Amino acid sequence: MEKTMRQLQQEVDAYIGQFKEGYFSPLAMLARLTEELGELAREVNHYYGEKPKKKTEQEKTIQEELGDLLFVLICMANSLHIDLQEAHDAVMHKFQTRDRDRWTRKEEER
Image 1: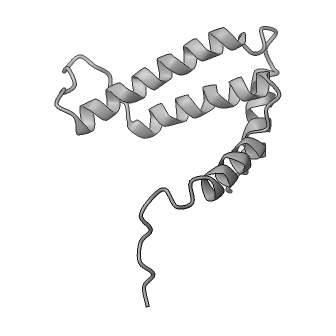
Image 2: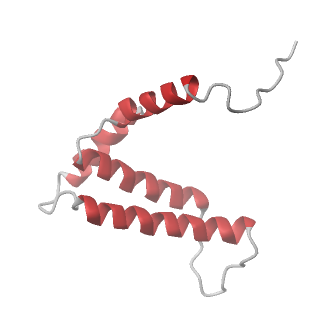
């Protein structure tokens, strides 16, 4: 079953709502986002860069790290009462208007 962004936010909120501690503070959440982004960067570097993984390092995937990053991003949005669907729609509007002629478009196939 596919989930909407709002459903993802509700699912994360229900999960976090089970715990007395609740969401971390915005600064702690930003630190966690940075940490997860670093882990994603490390995996991308292992797969596509020049830095091979050490034999002692745990196997992780880019998909797993993106999932961790998305979870923390949703936590941060929820804690700040930000609707990510609305945020996405606003940024897409910006790209489709302000930046519509910024990049070279592919030719239409006939």
